[in-house]
Length: 170
Image 1: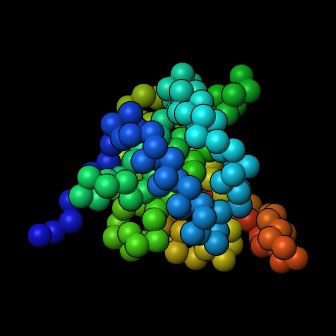
Image 2: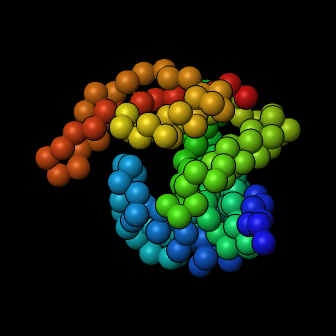
């Protein structure tokens, strides 16, 4: 039986399952620049994040479900400065076992459909490590352009990695 993939809003997924999904993506991916425990020191902090997503105009979190199990996520977080509210950051992660199945493309398509219908966000930015070639290729296929290369943007142990700032107009 073929795998069924669907994109849903985060409120249709149990918060603990979503927490587990994002934690697993952060812990298994060598490309995340943030540490999960620093971003969400507790489940309560994660629940606060979810509540805030619901309150900020233009903000949302989509979840990709594979056979009704969380497989990937995409967050759009608008900038809060009054002159930057038309812009947002994108953060996305796909569980390793689901890489190469088109789930990232589906999430980006669904996100831009929502962004274009709501008309609150005009420009979406993201950061990606320069050695994450598959992600850069995906983002470029979905219309993101490289804006800047940030040399030695990320440091893990004693190793530096360049960051790539990308954007897409809605």
